[in-house]
Length: 475
Image (tube, rainbow, N blue to C red; front, side):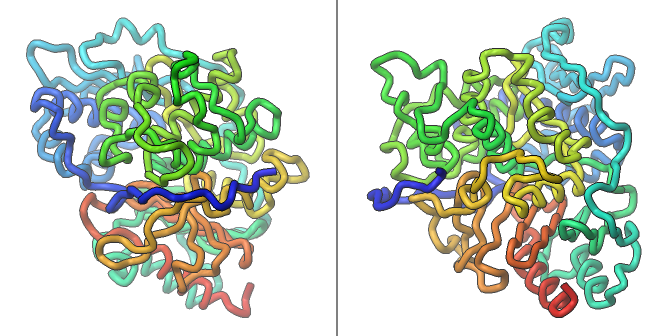
């Protein structure tokens, strides 16, 4: 059902040097960069305060340090964020002539940046939903759990997990906040830095893209979407628009052919400037035939989720869909997908969740989309997202290190990496957010972190190699 087309002529691949640390666009004025820096500070302070329960000192040490180099000095020079716990808002002043940058939190949907120039009075127009959410992590589905921050009963494994928090072999500049190693029934090891716990959420960054693909899969299972047909993007429906032929599968494969600037992982207007998905992603023009070129682009993911909203037609149903079709069905009760101010999910990056919730998502793929006897995703969806797309990233980065392959919003640790089994695939995000799924070992490894922009981040293939070796003969 989900077999990709074969034999397509591939165009030259465009790719990124990495997932973090790019400079701001030369087209942005100094004033705009300052407004974006204030938006960054407001948004991350809001989400870390109200999604993760952090205090300002911890937010400064984690969310506001090691950030994009172009914005780091601007963020540091800004005044402290003003946190209003009664109204669940955060404001950051950056210009005497303009209103502060504001971020507003709501239950279930987290924080939304208001657009540059907007005051808090427009917050009443933001989308809101009411859901019944369990108050605490239930520990399901694991029936055997190693103690949090305790001994696993396996000395070699404990030594490796400790090394994930400081051994330079796993990344000279890596700053790990959590390690979780699970099978479908057991938590083998679970460790956090001081101040963190199983309930502490972090931003997923681009791990959200894999979450988006899973939500799309749930929509395919329910007959709402078809990956082989043109994506129903409302802005592309004029009969003269060639983008009407871009399929949902093209978007999932990062093969839309759209112009997403040189750095497709930088959508600063949306992420930092309070912009809209419809201001940015759906306005891009074609620069290559759809399906024939791989180029990593936030916009492709955003458009796939935009297609879901268009297909559903009912906004309230759309806002509830991730929870009712996926999160709450598999116990991801601590996961918060955030939106722009018109209610478009920003599922290319802006999801806050815990290590355990990400492990549950990984287990769903080990079970080919079935959770405790209930099918969530179409049969074969796990194979679909882990099948190499027709066009691929280069085999090596500029420094000679291997570059993962790409499926449908998942990265492939196949024959390019000798350290792990060829069937391994992963969700990867900025600052070292990693969910590595290893079907042949029935295992999921989750690593969360705050790796600094421009540094050597966490080397999941090395860590996984050592974990698998330590557990040979045990599992």
